[in-house]
Image 1 (cartoon, rainbow, N blue to C red):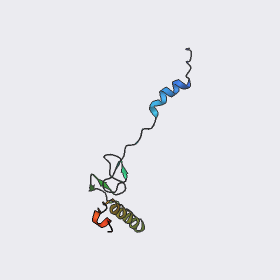
Image 2: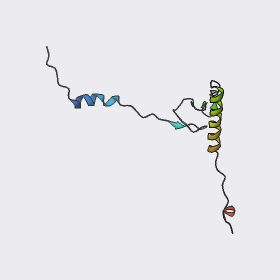
Image 3: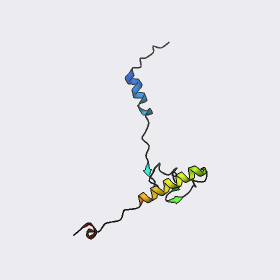
Image 4: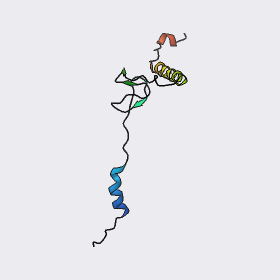
Amino acid sequence: MSIRMRHTKGHRNERRQHLKLKQVHAAPCPKCKSLVRPHMVCGNCGAYRGRQMIDVLAKLTKKERKKKEKELHDQESSSQPAKQLAPEKLSRK
């Protein structure tokens, strides 16, 4: 019978250092600006690489569909660039 070696906290922690969770990489969706993992369809709007792949609204109830449509419309309207103001319009002289 062999003698059992001691396993200190340091040895245990050195072994476990590779078990840590890695940070998830995400990029904003070009259509709705929600965070999406690379090479995945956006769960919020159903778009992939700028094209509509999944109809997200198809499986929702009427109430949920109306809420989701309003949310998507608000996101699209906020993503449009603001109008540039001319210096003539800013001066009041």
